[in-house]
Image (cartoon, rainbow, N blue to C red):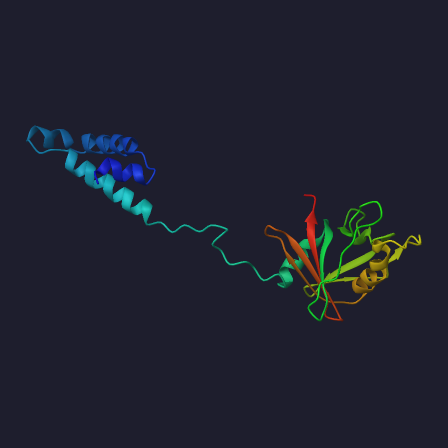
Length: 202
């Protein structure tokens, strides 16, 4: 493989290296070397080759190759302020999956954590009604204060999951957040179920 094909293979342009090397050698006695019959192309090629080898040997780290962070890292939980989530999965303690229906208007079960009022306020849609209350982030855990909501009666599948969902929020044992795409929130209530949420919005 020629020097130029080697450089082209590594997506590097030889021209800037040649120009810089010529300037260096002309400024440091290359003219005298040329007058004495010594070629300047050999040291230029050596300098360029050394630069290419150095560039090719640099380590490359990408997000894809990096190990995913621990979602239950307490520091990650502090990133939950001012985020909105949609319930996408519910794994029960026995390993079976619980159906996660939407409301009768197609609206999914949601959870919004906001500090816009100066306090940590939780709100969302629980399958039939809207709920609101406070939340806390302490010792790497997300927890909720008393949650209040509207009292519309629903016989739809969304209404059937509402009670269990609100009870799960009231009895959180562990919580984890993965802020690297795809962003996910996991809430594990005291009964051992795992509620998985996907990030909504920015």
